[in-house]
Amino acid sequence: MFAETDGSKISIIGSTAKSDMSPRLFRLTVPAFPVFFSGTGDMFAALIVARLREAAAEADVLSKKSWISPDEVVAEELPLAKAAEKVLASMHAVLQKTMHARERELGVIEDEKERPHRAGIGEEGGLDEGLDRHLRLTKAAEVKVVRHARDLVHPPALERFRAMNVAAVSEMDEGRKPDELGVIKMGTGGGEGGATHQT
Image 1 (cartoon, rainbow, N blue to C red):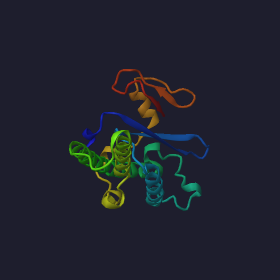
Image 2 (image 1 turned 60 degrees about the vertical axis):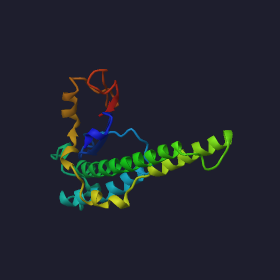
Image 3 (image 1 turned 120 degrees about the horizontal axis):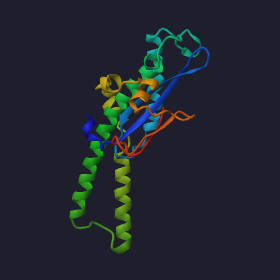
Image 4 (image 1 turned 30 degrees about the vertical axis):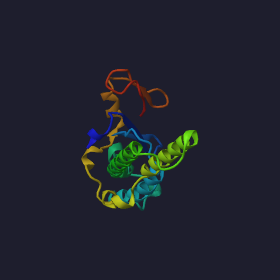
């Protein structure tokens, strides 16, 4: 459920060129978690390779150069867009479960703080305790991939992770036009805190 996040969002941009090398841009906007996770880059890279091949096979473009779809295929229907949808749905589920595990570990650490100290005295003891807390929370934030493999095979809530053609997204952005780099500057309204979104 998206309610687990703090309302922040991240936009992911993808593009596949047409035969004339003009881009077909799509964007997926997903909830962001208020936690730094370790291993998300590796997870994304591994999943996108597998899902892109799967989507290219479904689109029957594995025999085409660079697996490029015909020009008439719109951005949000590209194999890369379809692959990204599944990857992000899987990642959201795994990261959400990882965050819950981290919160449980944080609760254990807080409970231990209430008990008498086992070792360490004075300033040095406080440093050891702080380092121990940091290391435990860092380990708890390592992505729990293997234990949630089912979410990788069968991405849950896939309907919530849909790519949108950037042209359609631009219309939603109250007519704001992207700059020469494809960036739309968002105002302070709309709940996104003046964030910059690449399109």
